[in-house]
Picture 1 (cartoon, rainbow, N blue to C red):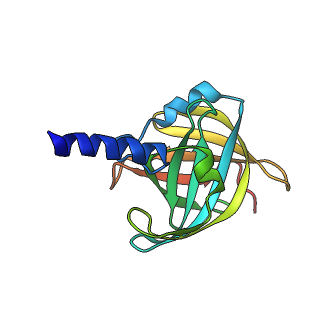
Picture 2: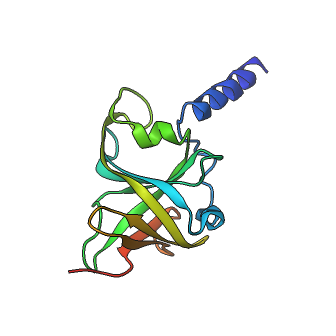
Length: 167
């Protein structure tokens, strides 16, 4: 009983501090409620001890919920007609904690160095359980992209691609 209570408290503390909860991946369909609204977008470069060098793409679902829908993208942002693997991650709670974080994660999940590559606003164009279309508002002009759930290998595998490819 005491161990169970401690685990509950630790889980509560971890969620409050922004540590991902592997029991809650959320549904990208939740983003449908935010259609057309300006949301937080962060692209981080993460050199994790276990997963190696990859980008973390995070979309804030609302200031009220303070959750970040997240995908790890091993090959980074696709160019032209490329399609890159994007591995769906658990919801990251504590919104601003993740959009502003850079530095060393010293232990546990994600141990390694994190830097911010891009911090922008994003608009959701459409969202369903298997597809999210979004536009990132960049200085060089908006860029529309899509995340599409795959039916192949892993249940968390998605594909990230340019919706309107540029050369």
